[in-house]
Amino acid sequence: MKTLRPLFVLPFLLQCSQMIWKEASLSPQVVPTDDRQTAVIVEVKYEEKDSWNPLNGTTDKRRYHSEIQVLKKETNELRLASRWEIPSWTLTDSVYYHSGKSILYVLHGKDDEYGTLKRRLSIFLPDQTSFSYPATPDDLVIFQISPSPSGDRLALVTAVSNENWEFSEFELRILDPKSQSVEVHPLSFWTALPLYGIRWSNDSKRLYIRTPDRVLLWEGKGNLAEARAYPDCFSPSTNFGSLAYRDSFIESQNPWKVKLGERKPEAKIVQSLDAIRVCD
Image (cartoon, rainbow, N blue to C red):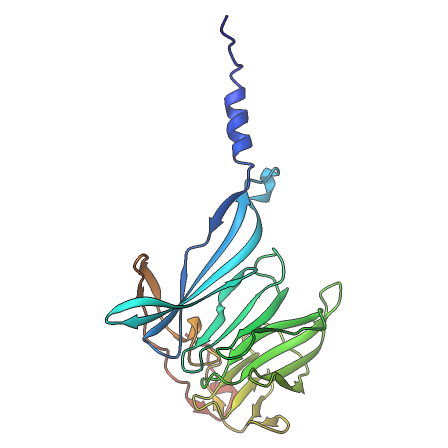
C-alpha cells in the first residue's frame, strides 16, 4: 500500500534546504590603480543561509574571504598579472594597488562582522614577505588608510578602543612598507565627519590633515605644523583607488572587460577653512 506524505512535509523540506550553508559572493568591483593600463578586481565571497529568526531581515553569513586580482592590459586584452586571497571581507575603498611599485595595501576584516572597524592592514610587496599591521596591540583601530601617490608611504589614522568601543589616543601614523618603520604623531580627536580628513599632494611631498579648526601639514619629517595653504577638498585622499575615479565598473567577465571612468581633478589650494568644500 502506498504511503501518502502529509502536505506539510514538502514546505518543511524546502525550508530546511534554505537553512543549509551555501557559497555566495558579492558582485566583483573594480579598483583603479596609478596606471590606466592596470586595474584591480575585488570579489568578496562567503557562506550564507536563511536565518532561523525572520526578524533578522537578512541571511546569516560566515567565512568571509576576498579574492583580489591585478589585471594588466596587453594588446587590448586584460590579463591576470597577480592574485591574492585575503582571509576576510574587505571594502573596495580600502584596497590600493600601486602598479609602479607593485605594492598592494588592503584594509580587511578580522572576523565575520562585515563592514565594522574590526580591521587589520595587510601589505604585499614584490620582493619581501608580506606582513600585517599592527601585530600588536589588538585593540588598535584603523579609521583610514591612504597611500602616497608614489606608493612608498602609507598614512593611517588610528586610535585605541576599549571593550565599549570608546576611542582614545588618536594618532596619525606614517608607515614605510619597505623598512616597516612607523612615524607617529598624536591627534586630539578623529571621527568620520567631513570636518576630518587627510589628503596627499600629487608629488607625495606633503600630507594635509584637516580638523574642524585648522589644517595640519606633514612634509616628510619632523612634527606636524599648521598649514597656511591646503586643498579645498579632502576626498579622495590620494590620486588612485576607487574613490579617485568616477563611474568605474565591470562590463563582463571571462574575459574581463573593465570600464574606467575619468580621474577626479586635483584639488585647488586655498588659504581659508571656509573655502574647503564638500567633495563631489
